[in-house]
Image 1 (cartoon, rainbow, N blue to C red):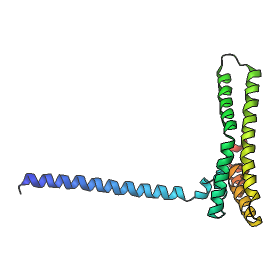
Image 2: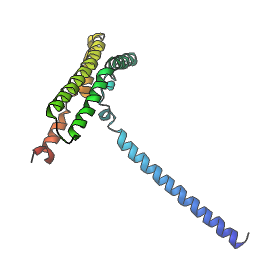
Image 3: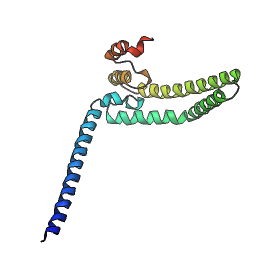
Image 4: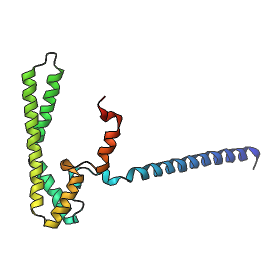
Length: 169
């Protein structure tokens, strides 16, 4: 081999090593970033669909099916609420504010949202009526952490009260 070949091999090796080092550093960064994000996994599972996690797999499936059925039956209310919000935004953006029309659109949207919530809550109640007393206790405890019945965590109100944003100044 001549000196030109050695130079080409040396440059190719240098480029490959830099690429490998960058890949290792990027992978390590991703691993550490992902590890920190998955730690509070329960905190991320606040949706109502996670409320049956403390129950058996069969009961979890029943709850998911119950929610799907309830939401399917309430699809019209969801559509009405979505259309109502669009109407409210359209009325707010109009050159002249038509307060009676805005109030009526807000009332229709509120009624549709209320009907949607009532349908979903009814499906949750129907599911709960089929649970044993022990399962209902577990389910209620889980609902305290998830869904629209969620209660604030004990330390959250103290931290919120101490923050300057909550002082109202």
